[in-house]
Length: 248
Image 1 (spheres, helix red, strand yellow):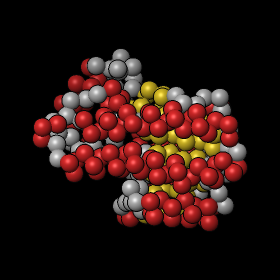
Image 2 (cartoon, rainbow, N blue to C red):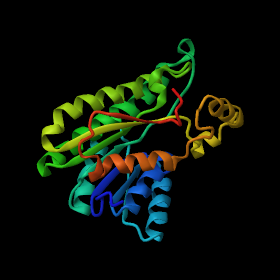
Image 3 (tube, rainbow, N blue to C red):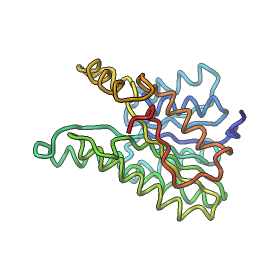
């Protein structure tokens, strides 16, 4: 199936590895010209090198998604290098778990700032370009955690906030042929998750609660993002696509 992504320009935040890394590769494989961006310079360089080695078109930009000046530079450089921007994937985010009574203000601020403020800043910087060309796709990576997880008040709140942002922008920008959607992954076996000291215990617990009895893979999320970014999803907006193996 042709997804109609050839020569589209896509920015994927937090794309040095994990879900972001797999997503930026999937979009590039569909013919998009992709921008790898992350706060880790070595990760950006490695990802771009790997993509180019496979004959894919990629450019790397290092920056802090929570800083307006970095985000403005990200978008300006993307337009300078590739001539425009069509797709934004808000993927940057991380957990910093702890029960509320032990959670520090820094734990709260860092998780919410990267996940939610970062998405706000990126949307705000990209949107004028999407409006001007009367076409665009915005996909935010939320999480099943928006339903609420113990020990993840900060993460759950930030991921729930992404869904509110998604619905509000879908209503605002639909007149410009811009769709805004979210993907809510379940348990995904990323590099970071596999590195957990109790990974096997966490995995077994998650798999037992999942109708499709396996961990999700980053490619499962990347495929969902590619569909929502495509011309095949032009009448889908304001939605949350759960990629959880049926676990709720």
